[in-house]
Image (cartoon, rainbow, N blue to C red; front, top):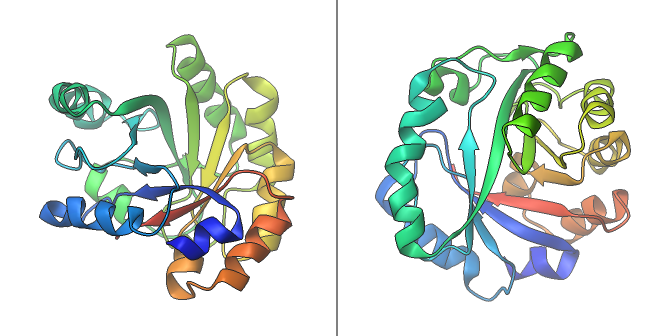
Length: 220
């Protein structure tokens, strides 16, 4: 993980829609080893909360209508977040359909927002703002065929005042740059760095968006 810090990443996300389980604490410890980057949990359920992390994206799957991910998992995890003293970042999690059915769609039992209907994403992001959330995460899904379209990112960025995090399907520094220029304050790089965890590639991602907040993800 030290190579990501040296290459310009600002934080590490640890989480998974399906795997990790009892390995979470060990994965977080490994992510923190040799690096001073903050490690932020990106949980798939209330089970993915541990005291070793520095903070947590307190996610609400606002794009779906499954009550388990609209309220139940949050209620179950809240006492543990408080007990562990984690910084909670209230986050509206919006799944965007960018080709193929991803693990998060299957596990959550929800359908993504169509990528060619930006007005739907805009309405959900505005609801998140009015509900008092602090961040909107536009997620194409791990290993998506392609990233969230820059045009959709721009539409949402122009419509709300909340910062945007964008991830899923970003395979090249150029795609990361396009997301940042469209209005993403945070860019999540997952599979690209998991397949090739090199400092050169991580630096290329950082340079592509002018050293702004590049977030590397660790986990399944």
